[in-house]
Image (cartoon, rainbow, N blue to C red; front, side, top):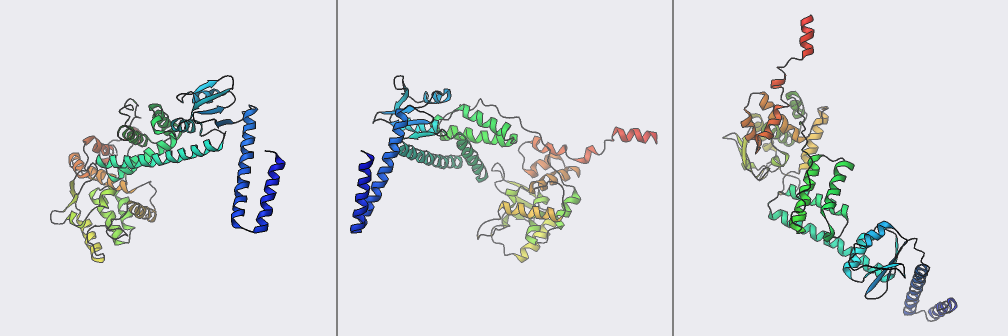
Amino acid sequence: MSRALLVKGVVFFVVESIKYKQTYVRYILAKCLETLRLIYKLKEKNSIIGKKEYNKMNVEERNDQQIAVYFDYNKEFVKKIRRIKGREWKSDEKCWIIPNNDKSKLKLFNLLKDEEMNCNYSIEHILKELEESYNFNLKDVENKLHEQLVLKGFSPKTIKAYIGHSKRFLKFCNKILDQLTKEDVEKYMYVLLYESSNSHSYVNQALSSIKFLYRYVLSKGNILYEIPRPNKEKKLPDILSEKEVIDILNSVENKKHKALLFVIYSAGLRLGEVIRLKVDDIDSERMMIHIRQGKGRKDRYTILSDNALKMLREYAKEYRLKDWLFPGGNEGQHLHDRSVQKIFKRACEKAKMKKNATVHTLRHSFATHLLEGGTDLRYIQELLGHSSSKTTEIYTHVSKKSIRKIESPLDRILKGRD
């Protein structure tokens, strides 16, 4: 079709549109212009392919059986193309031929998604559909992962963490799920540890999440069992002095917030435990608090402080408590953990606290102050709900009870000279 003939055709439709002013004719004109643009676009691409000017990768759908891929020699491109099953190098045409099926197209999209390439219209459209299908599959995997985690009895907090780790891993790999390998996990672990400088505990949880994903969702078995875990970091918790604890508690004026912090410190509770306390869990006769389904799905009892009980009663006089001991803003729901964190942060700021303390620091301080007060380590383990005594023994390293008995050699030397 010559350029002059095309121009005449366009002029004819314009004249007819003006003459009859019919919507249908204007619609045909728009479609005609759209077709012309497509013709010139394909013509330009075909001319590039015909001249073998492969500054970019060129993909052409030849027929129902074949797709041709053209590019200047590139070792990485060749390596990627060789991963496609059924690929064939045509030396006379200087191109690769791959099967024209959905699996090959999706593989091609996945391998070359980061490269600049020219595609004819049908291929580009199909690759877009396959990409949308790929994203849909990720959502399907997320739903299946959530289902498996629930069936295994994981806590909501752990489920949220595992799904988050798995989504970040899949986004990092950005591959077809069937193509995920052990090497992808090793590379991701390296990035988390070395390039992103995440903590060892974070990386360990990420690895546990991905192992669960591979085994129970992707049905890849135990191929990740040989991947080494980073050594567990031996960090000592930050501890508040007794005076610092009192300063924080006294800085709070709101009775609900004050009662909340009193209960956390006086009983050594975790954040997730205190917000899920119900009114019936406070046993004022036995002076105990019933912790239901704490960490590890375990029930336990811990102590109820006289002062904490007094503060709770003052708080209960102002608030009509029904079910939750510390209800949230929404009817029938408990206080959110972020709300507790904000309450504690404001209390620390008001008390002019310089230490980097969190809500969990109150729990660490509770255990340390008990140890320094002479409480047996086994009782502290029971109150905290630790399965192993080794977890509780960490407080022996931060307690000043034994350390303060040791005299520095500098003091001893200078004392002898005085």
